[in-house]
Every structure is written in structure tokens, then in C-alpha cells.
Image 1: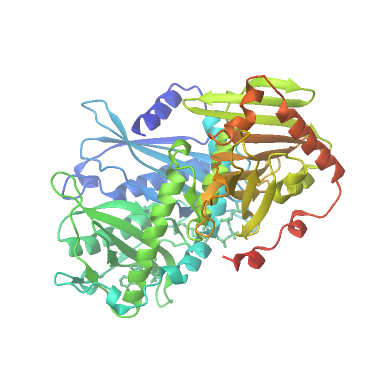
Image 2: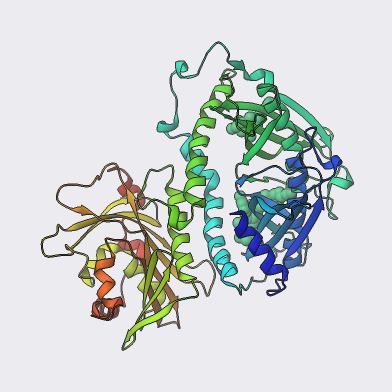
Length: 580
Ligand code: COA
Ligand code: ADP
């Protein structure tokens, strides 16, 4: 990981790709930036990160911008006095008035010359217009492979962050996350009452804390929040705690010079070696009521002299609100783990079938769509075979083989998307689909199917697959329609004697509108052992069954060129959720 970010830094240092929004900041860590242990305070780092990202956003927007939200941040290491922090920020994608800024932080040791990764973050900035109308930002045009991938994934990340609150509320109210019995709350001898960790502190926003529009810097607020969180955490562990993660958060409203910011923190729960501290930031001026600016959840560890996490005492939460937060912290821990594991895993490291459950649905579908987008963005595809207007491409990397079949058809892209995205219709044109049943309609864009395919050899059993299909219409004009497929495991549908359970690592379609009436359809598949036999003879040039399959697809699309839209064909999510 560290090497990867270092490479990025070096490549771009050579000036090969000039990116107009890119901004870099390098700071030598001085004692005034550090805590009493000689480590850079995370609050200071957050201020530098926010400032670099804000300057990058403003460089793209050409007008003042404010921090709207920051996705989860995982801190991989601490930085010592005397080391150099290198921060690089650039706009990955602009939407309407908002844009995603990618931030990379690495630490450089001046004596050894070694660079290592500290963290990566994605922040959303919103351009503020000086007039009454909303700013409409110019688009980012990605040029390198990496930029294309980030540009494409930014659309999926935006979807996830805009749903974040809704998802969290739904999950926190979900019965499976609730601990109903009081007895579940640990009351051991060494248990610590959380009221001992409660912190409340006030800050006056001065011009030095604000930008040229007198708006408080988001990074400054984050730094103040981290300051109170660390006090609460220290009161619990009676040692110096290290911040490991900050959950995704959102600035609900602006704050200005002259505001009094009230920051409150308390330990919500402890786990074996870590604790969750919640912080709430509210603002007021004069006799005005408090305005809720932000709430954040931070995970801390207490490390011993060898850098290993020390066990933490259990806690006794305060009644009512404390107990609710105690339970919610447990739920957030599970969600955090799912999110980190599913989202940040490299495609090759993700186990083939990930268990599906409502709490990880949004992350699985992010993983599903992003994996397909990454395969689609590869720039080393090799044409392996072409028959009439159907082309077969392959790309071999390490131990993976991906293939792509591509053709154009005289059907509008939105209609092709409607037809292809309902997997049950695939039996009409794909001989490999003997049967397809819709098991769960998760929401309007995600569906789980059971697909039955013929046996590979003469004596083999027929195969079945449990597939998550995630469909995405274009985010902007010029984007493709995307239908991503991957295997998941469902507790309600374990493998049975009747079938060999096959697995799809990553497959799906992208559909581009070539014109109003013509679309270019690309089918992708990262070949798993169960899928490979269906295509290997084609890739080896021994047959062209791909050609007949996709000719049948083309015919099917042409025959059904006119018809109802996707929402009329696919059953509603609510209707299908109940059978689970
Ligand atoms: N995460 C990321 N982006 C978000 C978001 C979230 N949780 N909620 C809204 N947005 C985006 C919207 O998608 C929209 O983007 P688009 O124009 O590209 O489509 C943009 O913010 C504006 O949304 P809109 O609905 O018009 O405005 P809003 O009333 O929701 O306000 C903010 C959004 C961010 C402008 C507003 O909440 C705010 O001023 N927050 C404080 C920002 C600030 O001052 N930060 C510094 C520290 S206080
Ligand atoms: P919630 O209570 O749902 O977690 P809030 O936005 O009210 O959401 O608070 C966020 C976090 O801030 C809480 O989880 C808690 O850890 C901390 N917090 C809130 N209010 C106080 C308070 N009065 N004193 C100390 N900490 C607080």
C-alpha cells in the first residue's frame, strides 16, 4: 500500500500529467504541531488536509468552497516531530455544485528518505455562489487510467454517501442490532462509568479559524472535535490514546467568525482493544439557540510501548441516552468493519462469495459496481477474436483473466439497459441461463437472483449461482449504463445436493449511447473456475460460441426494441423484501 502511494507521488512529480486542480502541501512537523508524546496531532493533520482539499476544490470551481462531508478515514500510522507530511489533493469528479476531492497523505523520513502511507480520504466540497443561483461546476476530464477509475468510482461513492444517514438510521433501528436485555451491558468489577469521560468545551471562532468568506474551516472544526474526543478517550484508558478511524461525517450547517462552538464528547462503548468516542459540535451567537453543526464517531486505541493495542475496561453507560449510544456503538462497529472490509479490499483479495445481509448491502453493491468499473477502465485489452460486428477481447494480469464481448445494436441505450438488467429475460438469448429466479428485490437498483446453468461436462451436475445484480443509470451524459454482477451467499439459499454452486467474481454490462438510436454493449467477466469452461475454447480460438450468444442477444434486443421501462418490468423492492 505504502509503495503504491509512493509510486503515484513519484510519477506525478515527474510532471507527466498536469492536473489543474491538483494541490500539494508539505509540512515539516514541529513541536508546536505535536502532542506531548512528540506525535503530530491528528487535529493539525485534519486542518492541513482540509485546507489542501479546499484549495484544490476552489482551483477547480474558481469560487469559494465549503466542506460538506468527509468519508471514513483510517489512520495507518502516527507521524513524529521532524518528519515531513506530504499531502496531495485533487478533484476526482464534479457533479452539480459539489465535487469529490481525493486526498492522499504520506509521511517522509528525511534521514532514511523512506515514504509511507498515513491515510487516504475523500471529501465533498460545495461551491458557494456569490449570487442567488446555484453554481454549476465544469466537468473534470480524466486523462490517465487512475483518473478514469477515480472519476467513475466517485459517482458510486457519492451515491453511498448521500444514502449514508438513511442507511445508518435504518440499521440502528434494525432489530438484529438491538440489545434488548439490560444484562447484556457488562457490569464487571473493573467496569468504568462513562460519565467520568464526559467532556464539554467551548471555542470562539476568530478570523484566523475562517476562510476569506468568514466561514469556519471544516478542518478547524474537525481539529476541535478531535481535541475533546482525545480527552474523553484518555479519561477512560488513563494513557495516551491513538486515533484509528473517523467515521464518515457531514457538516449540517455553516459556522462563521464570532460563533461560539460548543463541543461535547463521551465514550459511547469499549470493545476489546478499542473504544468509540462520539463528539457533537453545536454553534451559537449571543442568545440564539444552538445550531447542530456536526457529529462524529472516532475509534481510539491505547498502545503499549511496542505499539500493540492494550485491553480496555468495559464501561457502564449512563441511563437512557447512554444506553442507546452504547447499543448504537456496537451496531456502528459492525457496520464499520463491513464497510472497511468490503470497500477497501482489492478485488483479488475479496473472497468470491461474500455473505449478503441488509447491513452490508450498500457496501456490497458499491464493491460490485466499482469492481466492474475497474475492469471496464483497463487499458490493456487485447482483441482476441472478431466475427462480423462482435468482438472478443481479453486481458491477463497476474492470475486473473478477464474477457469482454462487444457489439453495437440499433436499440436506444435506455431500452437496452431495461432489457439486459432484468436477468430473468436472459434465458431468452443466453443458452447458459437454463433458469433464473428473482430472490430479493433489495431496492430499485439492486436485485438478488438464483441462476441455473447447464453442466460443463457430460457427467457433471448442473450449476447454480446466487448473483447480486446492481444496475446504475448514467450519472452524467457520456457515462454508460452499468449492470454489475457478483456472487453473494444467502443464508436462505445454501448450496444443495442438486447443483454445483458456482461463483462469479465480477461480471456485467456497460451500455453506451452511440446515438439516440444505437447503443454499444460490452459484456465483461472476470473468469472464475466455474465460468472459464464456458469461454476458454472461444478465447483459444477453437470456437465462437460467444458470437452466437451475443448475436442472439442482439436479435432479442431488436425484437423488443419497443416496450415498457425498467420500473414496469422489475418487481418493486417492497413487494420482494418480505419473503426473506
Ligand atoms: N455529502 C456530500 N454531499 C452532500 C451531502 C452529503 N451528506 N448532502 C448534500 N450534498 C451535496 C448535494 O448532493 C449537492 O450536490 P450537487 O449540487 O452536486 O448535486 C450539494 O451538496 C448541495 O446540496 P443542496 O441540497 O442544494 O444543499 P443543502 O441544503 O443540502 O446544503 C451544504 C448542503 C453542504 C451546502 C450545507 O449543508 C452546508 O452549508 N453545510 C455546511 C458547510 C460548511 O460550512 N462547512 C464548513 C465547516 S462548518
Ligand atoms: P447521538 O446521540 O445519536 O449519538 P448526537 O449528534 O446527539 O448523536 O451526538 C453525537 C455524539 O456526541 C454522541 O454519540 C455522544 O458520544 C456525544 N455527545 C452528545 N451529547 C453529549 C453531551 N451532552 N455530553 C457529552 N457527549 C455528548
